[in-house]
Image (cartoon, rainbow, N blue to C red; front, side, top):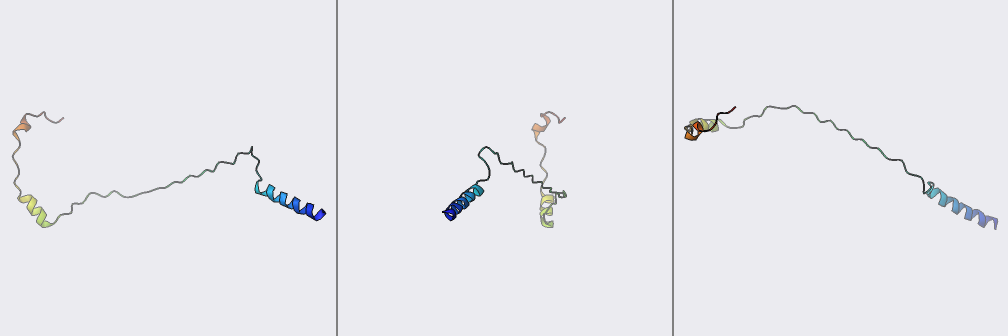
Amino acid sequence: DANEDDEEQDENDDDEEEHPASSDSIPPRLALRVTARISFRLQPPTMSFTKEDAETFLAMPIPLPSPLTTLSSPLP
């Protein structure tokens, strides 16, 4: 009978180990802070067109100013 009592006590000890915290206790908050630093160099925009494109643009006629531009208010 003494061995049976010891085995029952061991089983009860196992139960206590599985639930060591009381129901009134509050688990600590976990704090996690992630900081990232991203750095890059700004590069001026580059024009990507061929010599033929440039010649086509330069060959285009320049349109005459619209007669409505004289009626619009000047820019500040």
